[in-house]
Amino acid sequence: MSQYEAKSKKSYMIKHTVDRVINEENIVMRRRIHCKMLAAVLLAALTLSSLTACGKGDDSSTQNATAVIENNQSEENSGNTTAASSTESQEMENVVAANAPGVVGTSSKGYAIQNINGATYVNGILIVNKSYSLPASFAPGGITQEVQNAFNQMEADARAQGLNIWIQSSYRSYDYQVSIYNSYVAQDGKALADTYSARPGYSEHQSGLCFDLNSIDDSFTDTPEGKWVDAHAHEYGFVIRFPKGKEAVTGYQYESWHLRYVGLEYAKIMHDNNLCLEEFLGVTSEYAD
Ligand SMILES: [Zn+2]
Image (cartoon, helix red, strand yellow):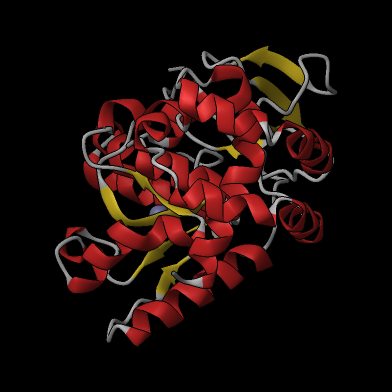
């Protein structure tokens, strides 16, 4: 198990222990969880206070919390939790209160939708799609250090397997997207361009949380690198943002090369349950016009 996988499992278990207590229908599992309630309450307090905009915990707090229930991990891992995991892991903790600053609504999954300086966060996770755009002023200038670090680890592990992945395209400013989109519209018309290129402000590339790998086209999908990324990206906190079969939900064609960072915990849930980001958060992706 890689360091990232190990961290993912710990993080996942920490943050969902409380959910399990509430929702778990498996009596055997419930009995085991009951013994962990005290630790879970302590963890919840630590975890809730450390969530950031893209839905991951502050590392130091998370590690402290992890240490608290370290002794529970081996028991969890060794137990037969297959039946439970298929039902319990489709949701994340609801960590943003309905009366929190900037809340403008609730997603279909019951998560608070916040508008913060023109950007939209669902339960603390930045969402950029055809329904939710970024203002021109949202300009991180590049992918975040956290995303870069996660990529570096993924790249190193891929390289150890004899595979070569690289970031071909990452951050794009609002103004740059203006020029890209306009050129596609001129080439293919607006209707077709909208199926593969985001309008200015609606590109996730402006978020600093995503990038395109290698060839940036369908030829990447069936390469050894493309297959490896499809199977392992979630172990580093990434998801295939526009998955195959989810075109009607994401509003975009399948893009095997476009990875979005959501953090280890949520990437695992989405991967294991075959959920795209819109399904996970309970939001749509449709242009208003
Ligand atoms: Zn992309």
